[in-house]
Length: 186
Image 1 (tube, rainbow, N blue to C red):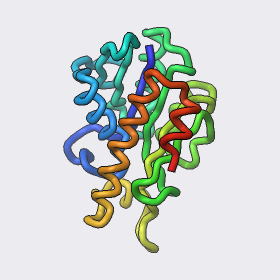
Image 2 (image 1 turned 90 degrees about the vertical axis):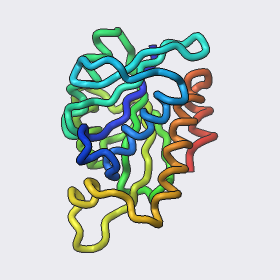
Image 3 (image 1 turned 45 degrees about the vertical axis):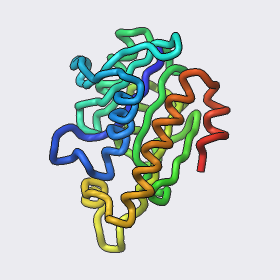
Image 4 (image 1 turned 180 degrees about the vertical axis):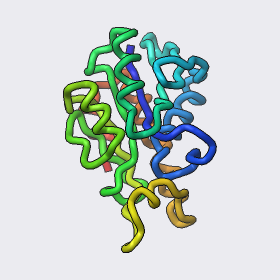
């Protein structure tokens, strides 16, 4: 089974914030792959389905961002999913809004959800898709910025990035991740 985990914060208050782009990609995938998010366990909301003969699990950790690993790792252990079959989607301040960066390994880069995931996994070597959300204006605190909605001029690039990230996830079902990276990075 492959696990695709989108990071975010649960609740209506956070639904359309910059920090929740990972959740948004999972919503896209749930709809396009017809995998309803109808299970709640492991501190997460998830669904399991089959796509082109591959078992796929879509996961939204409900632990709040800083404790994402508290959901991802128990689910992986329960279903005996190896680290090679994990893909994590999250926001990145260092990329312009709408830019995607796919990698097979790397540090948390200051992202608390990734810090938690890396700490629980005991490894930085897992697939990830970073979605650019840009940096705050001078004087605006990062925590405030990530918990706000996108500005009007950012809406279209973000909408396109969410779709491209979902497409990349779907591509990974049948294609080696290195090929997916070559196609979707940028």
